[in-house]
Length: 255
Image (tube, rainbow, N blue to C red):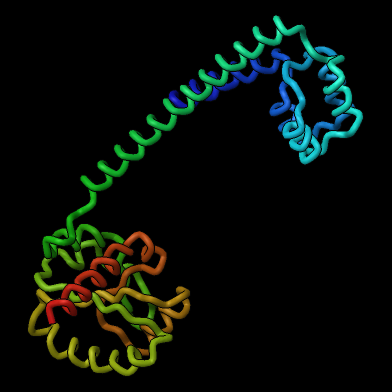
């Protein structure tokens, strides 16, 4: 936070310093595009002066920015211009200010890159490695984010629901998927037969439905007896879907 306060203050100082310098075509163009009128700019020029020249290319730039013919004529006439000596001094100051801004921007970019890299490292350190196949890692990853049907109502599952599981199968399905709807009753029957005999086994439903209503409707209609990832947490658990897709592609290549 302090870094950004310092950066903002520094850029503000540069902006104030630059504001005391004579104007250039580039700055006039920016001011016109930001809402300054040509008349207002001429008033500004009468106190700050003009430290630039207007050739054909710069004139087109000014016209495109919305400069009036009167403003362009005044700039070309030299009535707001400084002497060549003063212009050279001003341009040197402008170059120094621009160099400082560029250096500050680069320092901010590097600082932000380092900050983002640190965040990624911290998140990676905290995030369990699901590729190990460890059910403990999966249990920790889904802790507090599971739901299940209870007497026809959807309720949050206990945080330890996966704690003692040795085999966890993810069921990627959706209410809109016709083949899924055909297969789900068969999976329900299988689960009801196997789960009581093998308490170390669990299925977790990962919904591809487009709304909470559709997901819960699907769970109720199919009487899903297994756990499911809370709809509001699905985006946070997207790596499960990505890793499942990656595993499926590897399996297809092997076959």
